[in-house]
Image (cartoon, rainbow, N blue to C red):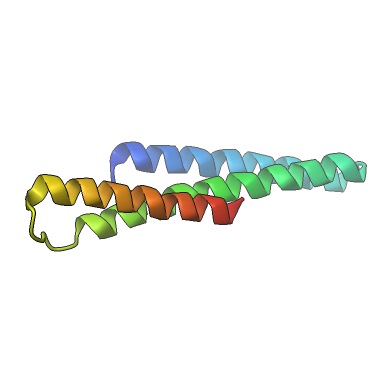
Length: 98
């Protein structure tokens, strides 16, 4: 869960956009729209959900790694290692969600 006010604001904005996309899909289905635009809207919704999931997972990864105890090498070395590990894990998550 995003904890900073900025991350929370961005996540809620994504959810609100998703709601609008889902409502547009509902209207298209009720109106009997052609399959191609409906499928395109569904793909857009899936992409938006995956983007939101990626952001929340990345936030969770960063928070979890930041909570690990400090090891040898000092705070600066640990921060560099933590940032690199967070980037690696986030990249894996993003590639999985595509």
